[in-house]
Image 1 (tube, chains in turn cyan, yellow, red, blue):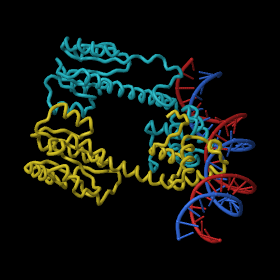
Image 2 (cartoon, each protein chain N blue to C red):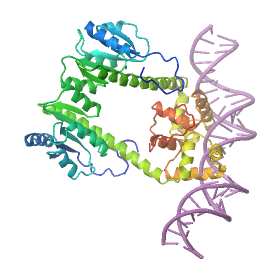
Image 3 (cartoon, rainbow over the protein chains, first blue to last red):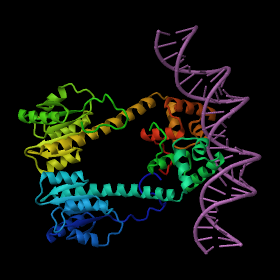
Image 4 (tube, chains in turn purple, orange, brown, blue):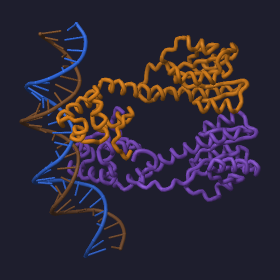
Length: 222
Length: 222
DNA sequence: GCGCCGACCAAACCTTGGTATGATGGCCTT
DNA sequence: AAGGCCATCATACCAAGGTTTGGTCGGCGC
């Protein structure tokens, strides 16, 4: 697979991305909803963070457009909580009464944009476009990583040890020595690893180990 | 000093990082200079961007602290120009009369921080600490990459082709077929590549190719 | 011309990788 | 007790990787 979610041969109709709007002002919600719908985007508009968290949030791609001043919980705190909740959807913050430190803090925390009201429609659309693109990339990367992690899960402890040392560049006999095994046993484990990980070559396996963050104490120049 | 590259156990003789201050107000320059010197940092303070660019800037680690409103060239434009000039030192911007869009634009462009005057000394020191840490990491990564690129430079065209295909996971005979060579010739090139790149194993070589961004059309699952 | 280097190839030889087939034993679940 | 999974090892065999020795050919600079 080369890029994007080409995991399956049949790239079924890509679900449309959804813009989640969180603002306690109904007028703003309506205005943003029609703005986003006018460019073909799906919209889910709610009045509070609680409402957003309570609503059904299927694993569809999308982004958040949130007012920083919300009843109960500020958008900035909200931003921080999202990470803890495992929600990594890109966030665009907007505010009617913001200041520079607030915007800087938001951007440092990873916000895609921070728009002061009133903003131009186009600025918001541009920000959403960037956010959706970022989300698409994040999801692709996450999907690929999860697939890899799932394969890794199927390995036994021994096989993982062998994987680590083999991808560190050690020869079978060295691995055997380190693990107190015979070389033939290492070969068997190694073969199992290649098969279970669907690696077609050692180079493949090395890249997989790299992506999984598997490192040994063994010195490597890279 | 805050922290520097803890990459090596004995970094020793680490050149002290320099904070470059660019502000047309002498009072600010003096105040910042003594602030930074009070925590053991070297400082180079100038009044304009031209002066900064004209001064001797050896390849020492450091960061920039720049006022966005400068005679002739704004700090924001300056930020953009830096990339074009190949200067990738982290930048901290400060302003007396900034607004939110300005700060957001600066942060999007990669500024470490954007401080509205007046700011607390500690905020500036914190920002500088982050900037210097970021610079240290960037320099480490850059140094490693340059060393790798230098090795790659010593390869002949053929050797590079062989490197690409071998690290893509192809067998010698496949590489030979693709390049119209005999297998024995591929082996020789391959051996030369391993020697010239100082790779102690194929796994090593794969990681090097990865770091160099060497990709072939060959399909890979990673 | 001469030396140097890169590219190319071959024969011989050795090491390493990889895959059977077959077998033993431990542990856990049914 | 039986079956399954894992780990272990041996023998044998084949494929692939890797080096050495030795040689041809063409371009480039002195």
